[in-house]
Image (cartoon, rainbow, N blue to C red):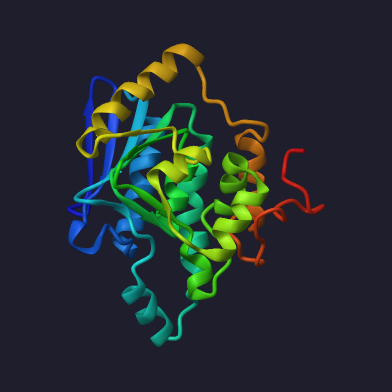
Length: 246
């Protein structure tokens, strides 16, 4: 991998670590390319039976690096191109991978970082962890799959609240809403995630995706609806105004 994204494999569990703690693991172009390569590698490698995604330091991922985003705007480039080039492929690979993927949410997860966690099968969260759907704060529609995964996990009403009001949800709040699978001590996220992935693989033999299934989510990602490129929000992700798959 790279200095900003680390890869390790231990007892058939691959761990992908976003390693830019000084910037709360904010995503630059390099950091978006490397996770895409890492999840692709995990999906294809027969030696990998489960995958953990986590962040270095006290944050999981703070989403898009806003300084880089400002530079893109200043250069006159298309700022949303990264959704199609990086975010959608990462989310699609995670959600169509025939292996359990566990987010070890060791701290705050905001914007695309929150979307990354929500795309995983399980979210083992630290007590200090939080989720922030920050898109509305910067005038964006939810992208990186959040318009589908958030309401699938928490329901349309809670998804609408989190997306439109854009307030943080602490660990216990997120757990009660169904967004976190479990909450553990701050230093136990990765060890507990390492137990969750292989256990799920043994018990199910394949990944479950709720009522939608990965194929449905994949179709919406390809169509741009999951990415939020058409301004879709909670409760309006399907072409008929209903939740997809229903």
